[in-house]
Length: 137
Image 1 (cartoon, rainbow, N blue to C red):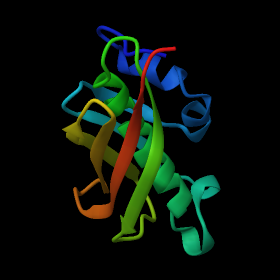
Image 2 (cartoon, one colour):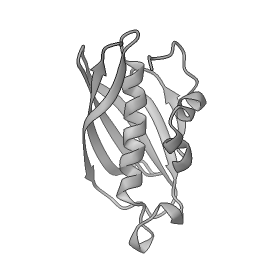
Image 3 (spheres, rainbow, N blue to C red):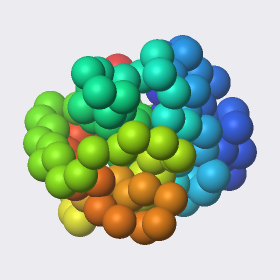
């Protein structure tokens, strides 16, 4: 699908059924910055009540994908081709907040940096992701 003109963040999450099921909420979505969050819950945890790394990576992927989507040329689509996450701190309560920014928006790839923080703004994880720019069919 190609990038919309002026997306409503609530509409963006509906494009990703997995994100809806995960409870992702988008707060802001522009080509320069996309922000979303997911609430801690026991169902999203691993041992010891710690939010599962897969949930963190999923949030990072969702927010970066939307940011890449908003940086596409007319009619193009995108897909993740690489994602790397460093986990820095456990999240045992509250909300995980993600902010994605493009580091490079080129003709063939878009590279994004996503910061994941807790409610106090402390770094929880850092993700760098590469998205392929797919020409219209």
